[in-house]
Length: 129
View (cartoon, one colour):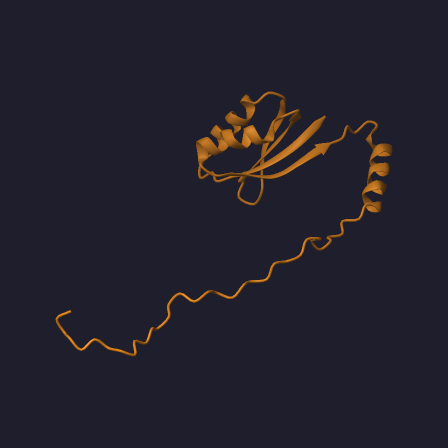
């Protein structure tokens, strides 16, 4: 199954871009690599059974920042038209409603008394004790 992986990387120069492409090319199953985005800061990797998490971690080791933006399955162009329409209809029928939690919500208890003033009715008259 073909996958399209988009990883955001902070690259400042052409040398850094080249190193990011070399890291992505070393992974198994990679078919194509390209840069995309406004500032050419997104690495787009297409391939079969590419481990997106390990690829992101390898890039993160080198550049200290790498964020996995998207991971999509790309269907084959030859016979994918008929199957794609059926999957779209299934996605439309599924509902994504968010239900409230079924457990009771605990209220905050009043805080306990930490100090209390004590009154002594018989004060000690001797100052030495």
